[in-house]
Length: 513
Ligand code: BES
Ligand code: MN
Ligand code: ZN
Image (cartoon, rainbow, N blue to C red; front, top):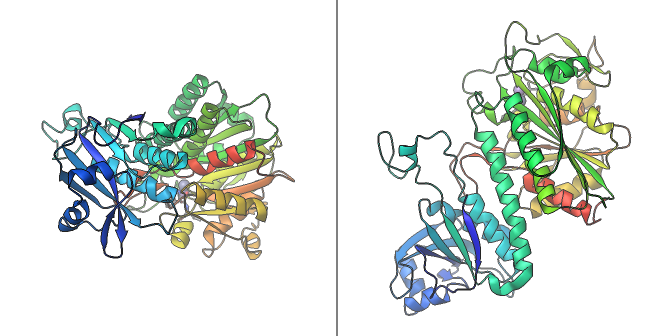
């Protein structure tokens, strides 16, 4: 993991391999941002001209490397910040996060970098810290050591150079305790987001319900959480028909993991429920080839919940947070649930399984009923639930649904503020009827239209009476199949962790409900 320091040096005196400066997109070309003064001086005031000559515009995500003399670092990396902010305005947090992330990615293999970005406030410092740590992330656990070091047989040029070693945030020390606290939060958050990314990226032959539960147990204990694992036998005996039904076709049995973080002075309690399908083949309603290569990502909701609960504990938030990980592997076999089977869910409701590929809602239903028994002030579930939500909102935005408009709006707004694009989706009344079954209380699928919202309508039936609930469908943003951008790598993204942590913080501060 990349080390981070708040530095009192400036760009002229810091010994580093590279100095990162910001450059904004002005109406007449690139505009070096504040923080770049010492570097600009080394170019005799001609930095903007040199950058322009090199083709730099200041556009978001753009990186330009240029050698420099007269400083204690031999190289400058100019990173685009996007448009120059309006008069008297600071760069917004997301612009800084993305620029720091793009810079960190471009510096793969570098030992030490000084970040001389515009750091006018503690919030700005935290955004740069977060972006740098998230951007430096690389998943190399399955690369052989030679390939990791960028040499030897099979090593591609530039591949596996290892992440940026150290980031010094220049001038951040002068901002005092506020900056220190904000950076500590950013470090905890980014480390846990990266942990969630690791889990999602881990191939499904190594990450299955039992091994995920073991990771959660170890980390939970380390951070003082109470961890309870219910195994396949106990789930069957306990009447968890959803988890049992989805998991019964696989060689690896299902698990329900409960992670409880409690604060002695907490006044509110939150339950986070995560979909943890460690591999989604579709089951007997098998997915066609081309639709299953990335389905190790189907436990991204559980990974986000896990990371968020650990972060809440690390930050010592004054709120009780319980995480529920609904873990199962969805496989076809002679013991698998058949389309046409009826499952009796935890709590007694019966569900006719018409499509075994609509499995997420089945494991979530059990976990939501279980979570409801403790009467939390709110339940938020997070799930890579439907392809329909990806069709509706694209690859970078998650859908927010729920049973309380004010809460849904609050979750949507704090997601956006945390840097996670989200959008509210309704529960049109006709969708509930679409889930009617001729043999059971409900079917697990309805018509094709509005599939993302229908999944939400299904889950709504399992939320305990009077409990405020929101549902985040992260099927789009959880896993980035396109190229990296900003602080988002290819593969697992850590989607929804920041939204959940922010929700816990606001609840702890008494700002919600
Ligand atoms: N895990 C998938 C949803 C998904 C799709 C996640 C794309 C990530 C990327 C889910 O279990 C699923 O298969 N949903 C079906 C539901 C349908 C059978 C009603 C879908 O979206 O096609
Ligand atoms: Mn599925
Ligand atoms: Zn799934």
